[in-house]
Image 1 (cartoon, helix red, strand yellow):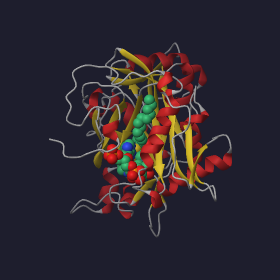
Image 2 (image 1 turned 180 degrees about the vertical axis):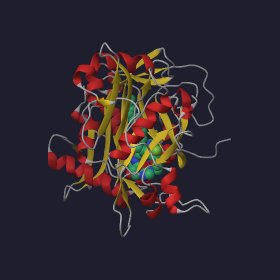
Image 3 (image 1 turned 90 degrees about the vertical axis):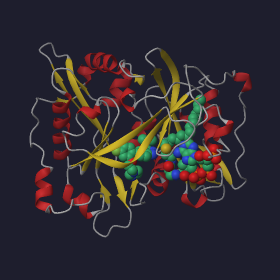
Length: 386
Ligand SMILES: CCCCCCCCCCCCCC(=O)CSCCNC(=O)CCNC(=O)[C@H](O)C(C)(C)COP(=O)(O)OP(=O)(O)OC[C@H]1O[C@@H](n2cnc3c(N)ncnc32)[C@H](O)[C@@H]1OP(=O)(O)O
Ligand SMILES: CN(C)Cc1n[nH]c2ccc(-c3ccc(F)cc3OCCn3ccnc3)cc12
C-alpha cells in the first residue's frame, strides 16, 4: 500500500506508485489544440526568462544557481558543481531548442531563482518502440524558495513548451522516489585518491588498515594495457555502428546518429573523455567514455572540490569489459580524478567488484513521462543522463 500522496504527480500522466504495468504505451494522447499557448502563471514577484546559453552572462547565471543550489548528497557534504563548459555541452546537442532552457528570475533584480531544461532525444523502449522525446535535467529552485510548489510550475511550463513541438514523452532521473520508477539503480564509486576521499569524509578508512595500505590497495596501473587513443572525427562512422549495435540490446536506450555521436563523445577538456581501440581496417572495436562532474565540498577548510569521473557509454568487443574499464580507471587517475563513479546499469556488474568499486549511499531512479512500460532491472538500462 502506498500512503504517499503526490498532490502534483497524481495529476500527471505517470503510473501510480502501486500500479502494475503489463504493456507499453502512452498514458494520455493530446493534440496541439489541447496545449496552452501562453506561459503558466508564476507568483507575481517572478518572471520567466528563456536562457540563451550562447550569452556568457546568462550561462553564468545558470552555473551559479546550480553551483549554489543543485543536488547534494544525503549528508549535505557535497554538491554537484557542473562547469560552464559542461552545461553548454549538455544543453546544446544537435537539434536543441533554446526555448527549452527555462529560467525564473526575480522581476526587481533579475536574480535567477529557478531553472529547468529539455533536450531532444530518441529513446527506444523494450527494443521496439522508437520514441522522439526529451530528456529533462537541471531542475533547480533556489534554496530560499523551496517547498513553495515552484517545481510543479517549472515542470508544467517545460511540458507545455515541449508539447508545442509535438513531443509528448520525456525521460528523466532523480535520486528520490516519485510515481513511478522505470528502474531503480545503485551507484558505485572507485577511489582513485583514497587519501583525499578520507580527508574530506567521502569515504572512511576501514578498521585496522593503515592509510598507506589503503593507498596501495587502490593503486591502478600507470599505463593502459591496451593502445587506447582519444576518439577522432574519422572514427565517427564505425563508432556509431559499434555503439548503436551495443545499445540495441537494452530495454531503455537512446539512439545516436553520427552528429549525436560526435557531439556526445568528442573529447572536450574537463567535460568529456572518450578513448578507442581500432582494428587493422581502422574500425573502432572498443570504446570507453566518462564525463567530468566535480562536486563542491561544503565548508571544508582544506579541500574545495572533489574531481569525479562519471562512467558514460562503454563498449568492449575485442577485450573483456573489465580490461576496458581498468584502462579507463588508469586514464582517469592520470588526469587527476579523485573518484570514478558508475551505476549498476549496462553490464557494469561484471566489473564493479573486480575493479574495487564500493557501493554508494543511495539510488538513482529512472522515469518516463506519459509512457507506461513494465519495470526494468538495472542491467536492462542502457541510458545515461548527465
Ligand atoms: C512531454 C514533456 C514532459 C517534460 C516534463 C517531464 C517531467 C520532468 C520532471 C522533473 C525531472 C527533473 C530531473 C532533474 O532535473 C534531475 S533530479 C535533480 C533535481 N534537482 C535537485 O535535486 C536540486 C536541488 N533541489 C531543488 O532544487 C528542489 O528541491 C526541486 C526543484 C528539486 C524541488 O523543489 P522544492 O521546492 O523542493 O519542491 P516544490 O517546488 O514545493 O514542489 C514539490 C513537488 O515537486 C516534486 N519534486 C521534488 N523533486 C523533484 C524532482 N527531482 N523531479 C520531479 N519532481 C520533483 C515533489 O514530489 C512534489 O510533488 P508531489 O507533491 O506530487 O510529490
Ligand atoms: C543524473 N543527474 C540527473 C544528476 C542527479 N540528480 N540527482 C542525482 C542523485 C544521485 C546522482 C548520482 C549518480 C551517480 C553517482 F555515482 C553518484 C550520484 O550521486 C551521489 C550523491 N551525490 C549527489 C550529489 N553529490 C553526491 C546523480 C543525480
